[in-house]
Image (cartoon, rainbow, N blue to C red; front, side, top):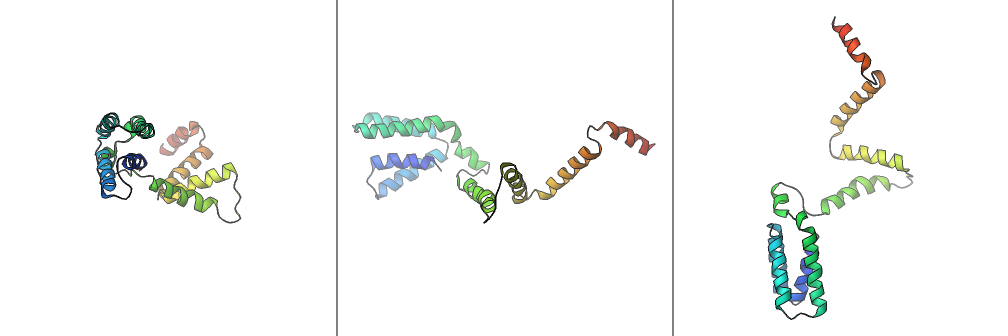
Length: 164
């Protein structure tokens, strides 16, 4: 998850590269965030930034991380997302982009315009999400409705005659 990059910034300020302490710090900090305690982590960083005699460069890095956390705190409800079964990493989305888009659009010799590529990607998404049968039923019903009763005005008259 993206926040890990920011945790590592602080870890490198506080601990020696490759040390057991740096790994432990990252683990504990990430655990706090995954438990939904982003505000606590922000307060911890603010205290640390003010209590230690850091160089200006290191204080600026603290500020950068704190600002990032404050700006994105509302989106970091990882405990809630995980309990509801949502993925929290970008890997799934990136993989889907590659699998759905890249694998189809970059076929050797293929040339795509905007409307053609848009249409094929919509169909590919339906297929990959295993919704093809449901989509096809909907599409067929819509097509029949549009072709035979575009405004549905005659449908009731015909239905009444058939029933009578």
